Each structure stands twice: as C-alpha cells, then as structure tokens.
Length: 359
Image (cartoon, rainbow, N blue to C red):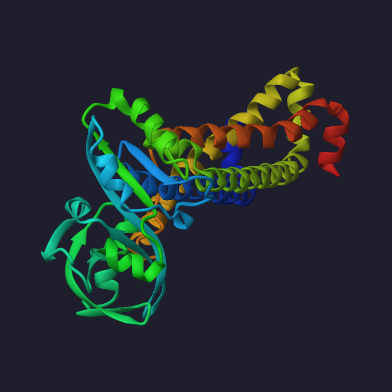
C-alpha cells in the first residue's frame, strides 16, 4: 500500500495547491489574531501604567470622547489609600507630513512613565516625541499642531507602540488643543484591597464620572469588544475559506485516485482505512503549512512593526497560547476539509471506482 508521503509526492501539483491554500489561510488567521490582540494589548498596557483605577466621563463610548474636570484629581488624591492620581488627555491630530498621530496630554507627575533617551520633559509650549515618530519625522526641532508651533524638548522610548509613535505634551496645552480638561484619571493605590471602597466613593460623590478597576475597564471597554469581534469574524471567514479550498482540492485528488481506492477496497481494505489514509496525508500537509505560516507571519509582523508608514501603531505578538490555538484550528480545518471527499471515496462501489479510474 502506498504510504501517505509517497502519495503526496505522487500528486505533487495538487499537493502544492493544497499546501499553499492552507498556508495562506493559516497565515491570515495568525496575522488577524496577532494584530488585533496587539492593539488591545498596547492600549491596555498604556492604561495599566500607574493605574489601578481608571476614572472617565460616565456613559461615553470611547475614552477619546471623555471630558472630566481636572480639579477633581486633587480631591481624589487626598482620599485614604490613594497613592497618586495622574491625568491624561487622549487625542489624535495631523502632524505634517503625517495624516494622524496620537497626542497625549499628561499631568506633570505622569512624565516619569516616559523613559527619556535625550532632552528633557516638556514645559508649556513644548512637546516630547516617541522615538518612532522622531525617526519618522527626521529629528525635528519643532512640530506644527493645531496651527501652533511646539518646540521638541526631548525624545522618549516606549515599548507601547501607540506611545512610541505619539506626541506627549503638558496637560494644559493639550486642553487648549482638544478643548477639554482631562480624558481620564489614572489612580495608583497603596493597597489594592481598598479599590472597591474608593471606586464606590468616587461614583457616589461625582455622579458625572465613572470609576472602575483597570482590569474591569479593559474587560468592558466597547472598542476592545468591537476589535475582538471583528477579528473573530474575519478569522472565521478565513477558516471557512480554507475548508472550502481543501474540500475543492481534495475532491480533485480523490477523483484522480479513484482507481487506487478501488484496488484498495477490492483487496479487502475497509472504508475507514481509506478515510484514515487521506486524513493522514492532509494532516502532514497541515503541519508543514502551519510551520511555514508561522514563520511567514513572524516575518510580516516584524516588517509591520518597523514600517514607518504605520508609525508603530500596528503591532502584533504571537504568544504560545495563540500559536496553540491556531495549530488546533489548522488541524481542524484540514481534517474537516478532507473528511467529506474521503467519505465519498470510501463509500463508492469498488468495481465502479476501478472502471472510472481506467476510463
């Protein structure tokens, strides 16, 4: 009996087509999941820096639309158990020649979160740039923002792509640019066990605001849900297209090998043996396709991360959990796509298979 490897070598062209189809589908699932997960991870990491509790305007759909009174931060800072309160304004605006750039207005005590690599922290009328945008803009001395010139006081390095490709300025200047007092407060606590008490007090005394733990905010944040849902839908489409591609190609393979299967049935081999043989062949292709797709995806993510066009905003990481998930999806896709043609081949009358194969 022909072994799975010999069968694959015998049908090289169709094997190559199945391999390419699987590789593209698996790489698509890898990239969609990694990039969407990277966006959520970067924004989550930014919020978690110095923040055990997050305060936003109540009822807003996105933190970019939030507007809260900055003076409340001083009152919260006096509460028992509160270590520090920092304020942020989150916004975006064009910075020539870039069409859109993340702008972060930060209270002075927040500046320590940005690791300076040159220059100094900004004062009024100044900004500091993330290293990525600093390189993209070719080391500018000033930038134009909202029809006003700001001097570049320093450059910082951040592992968070949104920040490394963004502009940080004093909270007061950002307030003028975006016409708001603050977008969010990040509250650091002395003791995390006091978080529920502090949250309840803030929500009661400031009903126009909403306080949540950082983890709770991230879990309930609508934009993250939209990103995840979109990723799942597109990933599912890639999965289904992969299955359809495998079904189509395996149907042609089965049609070309009907005589072979007829002989196998005529010498007493069971239908389950034929099905297992085809599944084994496809499983080998799936494992190889997974390895290639994994390598290609790592390469694409590396290119995206360092591409000036994306300014570091698009990033992705293939974790062990993601790799395991995609491997299981890949194997499932391959087996499901092969099962129908394999069952079809195993159930046709042996004499009919031999006659058709010789036709």
